[in-house]
Amino acid sequence: ETRPLCFNWDYFLIGIFVGFGSVWTGTTGPVFLFPCLFLCKPNIKATDALGLGNFIAMPISICSTLFSIADVNSTVDIYLALIIAFFLLLTNPLGVWIAHKVDPIKLKMSISFMLLGVGITTLARLIVG
Image 1 (cartoon, rainbow, N blue to C red):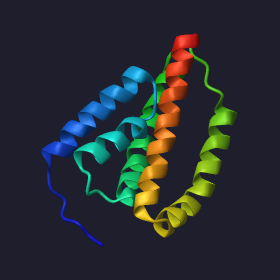
Image 2 (cartoon, one colour; image 1 turned 90 degrees about the vertical axis):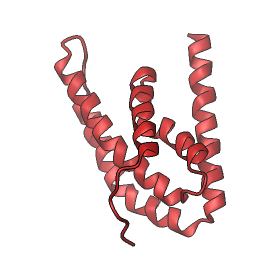
Image 3 (cartoon, helix red, strand yellow; image 1 turned 180 degrees about the vertical axis):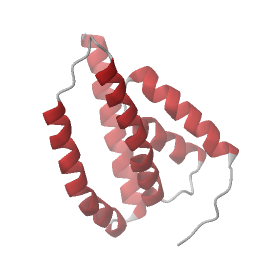
């Protein structure tokens, strides 16, 4: 399915919010993107949201890694990064296949519960220290 490429202010503003929010909190872009899309664009298909999440996670991850490499006080475990990248590339097609087989409402609900779990865990770590 092809869609026309057009500029949409809603997505532009969501992109700005997601970009600043992910940097501000040190989380990945999809942590902010999914709630924004599901709230601002309730008719968006869950598979489209997942695709956008994967798409924006790539440049954010690359820029974060390059910044960490450039920072003299930072250390980057290149072997761990390569292992994670390998398994992401290996398992991504399986995730795409599953996302297209699952009921869209159940997919949105599972994403929402996963994000609630991430939020609760992050809040608990901030409180505990």
